[in-house]
Amino acid sequence: MEVIKKLIQKSEELLLGRRKLTHKEIIVNAEALENRVALLEHGQLEEFSIERTTEKRIVASIFKGKIKNLEPGLKAAFVDIGFEKNAFLHYWDIIPESLAERVDLVETPGEQKPPQKKISQNDIPKLYPPGSEVIVQVVKGPIGTKGPRITTNISIPGRYLVLMPFDPSRGISRKIEDEKERQRLKSIVRDLKLPEGMGVIVRTVGEGQKKRYFIRDLELLLQTWKQVEEKIKKEPAPCCVFQEPDLIERTVRDFLTEEIDRIVVDNEDAYERIRNMIGQISRRSRGKVRLYTEPTPIFTKFNVERQIENAFRRQVWLKSGGYICIDETEALVAIDVNTGRHKSQKDLDTTILQTNLEAAEEICRQLRLRNIGGLIVVDFIDMRHRRDQQQVLQKMREGVKRDKAKTRILPISQLGLLEMTRQRHSESMASAVYEDCPYCKGKGMVKSALSMSVEIQRKISEVLRRLREKGHHEQPHIRIFVHPEVLNRLRTEDEALLIELEKKLNGKLSFRADPSFHFEQFKITDAVTGQEL
Image (cartoon, rainbow, N blue to C red; front, top):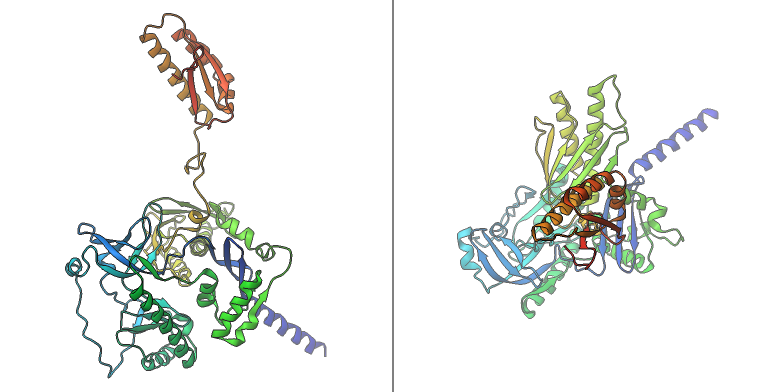
């Protein structure tokens, strides 16, 4: 009997352990001004999205635009789509896209495809002269001083399929690796009834789904495109003819899979909306949605708030005691890896490898959480052995597999640097949430009190010499207004220098503290007239 009890207990522990390994949940915080969605895997934040309800959803939206001008030197067109800044349309985003790299194309025997005349860059000025109208989709939102980036390769994602209204290709996502399943999906795709000139791609989430789900998804996509076509005919350019769904709808579309154990929502309207959307996909999955009604904020309850705060910090600690530093600049993102507290001298090579492997995993996670894009340079701790470098490189490549953004990773260089690119659709999370500090103007630092003292003394010398050259025979009396902390430096450590300066240049100096002054700000005036010198 005792043996049976132990066996039952052991099985329960194994089951609980298995559940813990696969436990995934989506936490939705819906408020008047902002919606936030977090994907947790056994409590750890793996994906995070934020959307302001007052801001327009631009990326993936479709516009009827008007060509404003062509720039042959840039090989690009600038298109008015209704925003303050014209959108940027590169010539290669006008030429029909080749899907072969990311999609396993499906042959459709017996189907007569209309002959496709290949378009070259030389044809574009004739096809799209200034003033002509064009249907475009935003692939990258405005970032900094740049306008939106657009393409004429239109696609509308559904739950299981992506509809391509102007491309007759059919294909399967290459992320679906099981050959037997690929053949099954190819058979389904061949049988789908599509209007002439249109194509579809099976999304990764379509793996293992029944044929009727694809048929239903295609019907919904074709209905959506019909509404878009009606707007294109009726509305004058520039105008939006299709707006990308909001964050809550995209979450259901893109993240709800069989692996998700539950969705917890803190807003009743959002809760009902999510249940209704899920009901159209799978009635069985509606039971996964839970309404959160406790007084503690939902992101605090699930420990998401603290993890978000950590995601915005420059320094991120690793389990072993090492850490990474992430610095975003205009040109690139620099990530530095350090051993930190993990400094075992017994086997330095093993310590370095372990820290670098942990860093590689955490870097991939941080890139997703922070929505970092563009050029990224990682400075790993120097590894002596090529096999260790290859192990770290492989860890990075495995880590980006789950990333929805396109990534490209180059081998680790002789200097220990890894270069990679990550597709940028919109501003990073830091840029979306934070503004440059009005005090340091985004530099992250101000001059020291010593530097300010040197600068002020230099300016005082210049002013007194200038007054003497103008014929001031009387001893000039000047007043200097400075920040209180700078004044403290002047009156203590540099007092003797200032007395010496008065004697040398035959001037009288008075100092006043002004708490309203910026640390780097100072003003020199005539003590008698108050005129600024």
